[in-house]
Image (cartoon, rainbow over all chains, first blue to last red; front, side):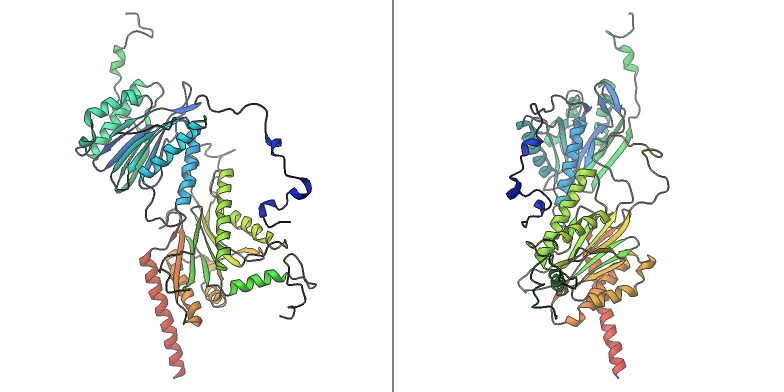
Length: 260
Length: 287
């Protein structure tokens, strides 16, 4: 008997020989994710002078089927950071688990200096890049919103290829095409962030969520929105789009049942 | 000890003819020299307190914390050989992480105590190892609310088959103490280390069984007990280290945290005052 607890109660290597781990292997090549299965659509976010607003709807689609309608795709990491997940929902759950264990380990010693948004973005980008380099990507596009080490607004993305990008406004998925131009009208560059108040930023992001609901067939009118400032995170996971107007739908021609 | 020199105390995993494992008993001796540690189970949380003996003036005060966090909602304080205590905590953290991997939920305090009890006991069975030279107090708050797991998809049935039983009570404060033999019990109030006898008799006076002690009161009592237990040992310097775990609705929101500086200092002031009061009484009686 040796002094290693993990060896207790197991067949002894010196008597039976080293355990043949090939017994654990299954036949066939390793298989990795080729495409996402259950997916979340856009995440949109914008910086303003005191912080960042981030929003995503509460839908998880199974192909074109609106399968799960109460999925929270914004995750509060701590009082400084919120992560928004677009893409595969099971990979989102894996990342959530990873962030949970990271947070637990971070708080073993009472931290005077908790992880900030910039730290978390660096970490997540490296996780994403590692996984794409293993040819086994996590099929997500993440937005990391919060405050950096100097308590300034921070917003950056990391995608399934490990690509990182930062901008005063960001959107994933369909939002990159539909919401991004709208947000750039108000916040074209870093300098204009200073001129935007919290209320204006929230209004802007809500407007984007409405446009996305109008034009993205994989979206829903229930959504989550978070505002991160020095005061902490205000996360609301049960918002509903207001003042919808579907009048424009009458004008759409080219498919459907209309005859003229 | 009459049995010294009889040969039965040299090896772990060997009983003496009268059925004792002397290595375990010697490990208990190591604990008896450690700084006093106390745990109190209050109605709305747990308080852990430690008399941290200062071994050198070159150590920074307030640094080198000895009460450790496991997962988010459990605290462990131990008395005895410090490195053994560190290893114990490290194993507890591994167990809590493994539990999360398996069950996607935080480990209940009772299960953690059970697993750590088994672990410590295994170190009494083999001649190639020695028992743990620590007695550890494990305090935890099991969440009364449902915690989100993995950003879970959907909320599941509310009641009935596969759902929840209505009106069932969940969670609460839990306190366990594990000895070098692997023996563990759940306690209302636990004490170990040099001043354990005094501390235990003070704990018994608190009527913890009634479950009426509030967390704030518990903090004050814990500080007082550590100061009383230290009293015999006046010449030695010590620092009071205190942590607490409240309900989700309470001050720590279900997490294990250090007691805030202001509250700790207030509790220390009251503890010193209570000690002085005792001394006055004695003097009066002598007169």
